Image (cartoon, rainbow, N blue to C red):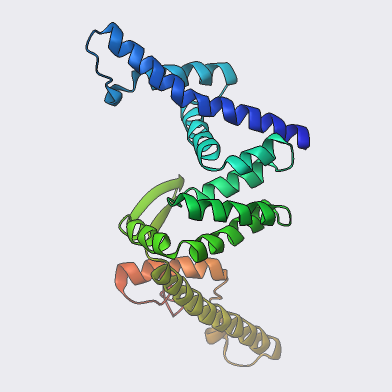
Length: 256
């Protein structure tokens, strides 16, 4: 694992150097064109270099770009973290988590303080646990920045749809955390109530049938609702949006 960390560090420093190579090639291209101006909008050098690396290491150009961006953040903003990686003392997963969570901090002093705490936490926590802890740490150390980022993030709220498989799609709602949590909790409460009632109705019908209570017509009309709670949540959500009535696709056997 230490050798893996050292190798990751070497590869990260290579990818971080790619950005400088892109800039150098753009300047060379500008000089050859005798304009003296670097036209970054063209991104010709970047696409050229990313394509070369992608072919060499069997990655997509998008993966190369992502790796370069991640490496730039690690090398330029988290030198202490990279030193631990180079020494084989910090795993790639922990290092990238530290950079991913803390990369949003603009103030160098706050970021340095964050990094000191993060490295200590990384020695005790799994990457998943570390991510949660670092999120709290960022909020505590950089409250003003956190509020600014929240405002900016809320501006990106949206509704998207995508096809999952034939006959099934996804509706993805991105919005303020409080609203999303409240919506999810309401769906959970409604679905739980319906699911509990369905189980009680099915149990009562089975008991009545076993005891031969009631007439045959009533027993024949009973249609058990065997949907899971997750399925009911989806049905309730769609009913609310389509009809404003959260009945989960019908409250009677006929409707179902």
